[in-house]
Length: 206
Image (cartoon, one colour):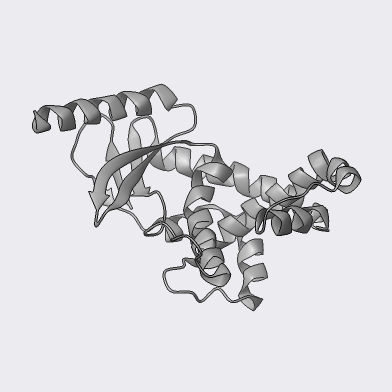
């Protein structure tokens, strides 16, 4: 993951984001300990990012149950495979006692990333962990991909920093993209950077 300012095209430094989050978000340690007994040894996983994903998914389940639990139980809607299982997993969750810890993670993560990015910093990282899954991918492989994707998506999802995904073209007939993240509230600056990048890329193609 690379960090660079919106006022320059030069990369300032590469950052081990997992280490940074581990050191700056102490409330996340609860989720890291919680994940120790699970199978988190899949290739390419980062403990801090896996824990961050776990915190976000726990919070999502609790919020979904609070907002839609009564309706789901009453209507019992017909849902497709995968979605149905996750909906009922949320309805049956008993994790409500962990909500304060999830909110602590959100607050600490936002502070940590705002401190890192300051006014002009932008974090560049992959949007997803690899090539998109193919149709009819085995369920276990699809869940593994989803877990890794959540590890990346949870950075902005839990902190509230702004994120934009920029398409980079195709590679072996598959779409490629990169995500740019800026501090919380810097939406206009980030969009300005994207517009500048787009203009520069377009001019080079002409």
